[in-house]
Structure formats: C-alpha cells, structure tokens
Length: 345
Image (cartoon, rainbow, N blue to C red; front, side, top):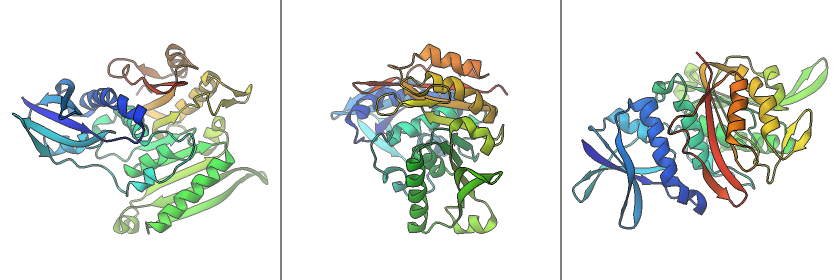
C-alpha cells in the first residue's frame, strides 16, 4: 500500500486551525466510509518541516478518488509519500464558482467557512446517496440560514439551495449580497423577489433564483435553484413540500450572541426548545434516506438531549465513529459539536 499525506488549508481563525488536523482525520474517515468503500488505512498525522499533515495508506489513488478527496473541507494539497519525497497528486473539486462566494461576506457571528463545508460534507456522507457525491445534484435546506453561509457552499457544489430565516435584516442583507454577486460575476440567472401574500395579507418575503455557472447549461435548462424565505422556521412546510430535500444542514444558535426563538417561550438561551419544535418540521421535509446535520454549543445543550430530540422526530442518529469526533472549541464560551441523523429509507 502507498502512503499519502494531506496538507491542511491554512485558516485565518487560529482556534479552528488548531482543531483542523483532528477534524480532518474524522472527516477523511467519513469520506472513506461513505464514498471510498473503506479502502483507507492507518489514518494519522505526521509533522514534516514543522508543518502538520494528515496521513493515510491506500492502494493507488484513482482520478475519481482524488476528485472526492479534493472536497475535504480543509485540504490544501495531496501528496504521495515516496521515501523522503512528496509527489503531488492532482485533486479536483466540485466548485462551480469563484471562492469569493464563500469568503467575501464579513459580519459578526459568521460561521467559519471551512466548518460549514465540513458540516455539509459529513451530513451528505451519512445519507443514502453518499456514493453519488460527485454526480448527484443534492437539494439542501438550511432552516436557520442567517446570511447564507451553508447555502453558498451548496451553490458552490452545484446543488440546489433553500433556506428560511425570521430575521428581516439578515434576509435583506443576504438577498442584496447574492443578487449583487451574481450580477457582478455575470452569471446567467433569473431572480424573483417580493412579498408572499395569502388572503390579501403579506405572510413572508421570498427570493427565488434559477442560475447556472455555464451559459450553455442555462440555455438548456440545466439550472440550479435557490430559494430563500423570510419567515419563522416553524412555518417551513408552508413554503417547501414534504419529502423534497436530500439534506437539512444548520447551525443552531450558540446561546452567546444570539439566543433561540420559539413560539411558546420567545427568546431563550438554550437551543433545546428550538430543536424540539423544529426537528419534527424539518424531518418532514427530508426525503427517505436523506440526512440532517446540526452544529451547536454543547455548553448550552447536552449531546444526549439533542440526539434524543432527533430520534423523537423519527430520525436515526448516526453515532458511530467518526461521528463522535467532531467536537472542538470555538472560544471560551463555545464548545461546538456535530450531530447527524438519517431519515429511514
């Protein structure tokens, strides 16, 4: 078997950079089990020239394997280790657009882009269609989408993206950003933006966009869909049909800068009530075999409680390794973890 080494992508976030080696090991194992057929062995770490690498052994990496591994959230480069030499392995990515779609927005409380990609990846890898990672146009919902970090990553992959958020300022800021970005990049698209009325009353605002990275795809109707609603997440089923999403991916409020809002209790610090009310709604929107991935602050909600709430919503919690290995510190007040559950097929 050959030895390979993954060079970790530098992160502007020092704390996340410190955690990225262990997170990459866990994510690599998820890729191995979900897509690569358990062909990787001896996943570990090695420091060369003062730089940490994630290492693994495998039979010769194929072009398709490299295309899969290129989508690891923190991979910068892949090498085959031959004696004391590192031989570069060409990796490709699903990326359809320039990376400023992901990086250009700057605002307080924004989730680290590399972590957002990791969360989307490991949720997809737990779904029934994980082996179709490179070929399927997954449909992704973020039911607490904020300013669209998850949606932007879904678009980058060529997926269909949908979101809902009750904060009007976040919705309007994100709607302005995505439309401006598409125009500036001269990406072929058609947008519809305006109020949603029912019985002559405005019940929400909605932005719908059909777009394609390639003009020929747009002309042929091979477009991605983008759909964001300004409304309470508990009303998601009023705007999206049951059983139409492959993935539900979201960050629960961390209970530090932002609390969680529920109909019964209003603003509270713990995300447990939000998850208790929201999980059954979001689970209904998933297709059989689809998966839900959440990230949250374990200082304000225990993992066992969150897992129990997803199980009560009819989902099967994926709790074997590597899905127990994504907990990491964000700052003094936030210890973030990832929980993924699958809807029975």
